[in-house]
Image (cartoon, rainbow, N blue to C red):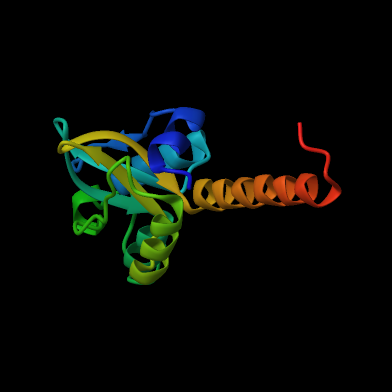
Length: 145
């Protein structure tokens, strides 16, 4: 089974972040520039929240607020669901489904080491299934290499 550590090894450990005192507009600009759907909110090196496009839609647009006048800390999700690097992709998929989240920061010993998205999880699951299918085909046809 693929682990979060293996996914991060393939995709990289970088994770985009923003200060809680930045404006929501700045957060949206950074998300657009990096083509990502969420930013980690860091105070120093401490993870204190996450801000996503969903937060923007529900807490700014639908409430008639303005992104240039609102700070990230006002709309960020503070109760961040995190995982350790040894967690399996299947466990992450179940957690994401149960908690209704699309991004999981990865913490090792309390230190941020990366982030995985639902897209990363789906890609890893598909890769696992393709490998299994290939192995079964090799077994069935008797052409083991």
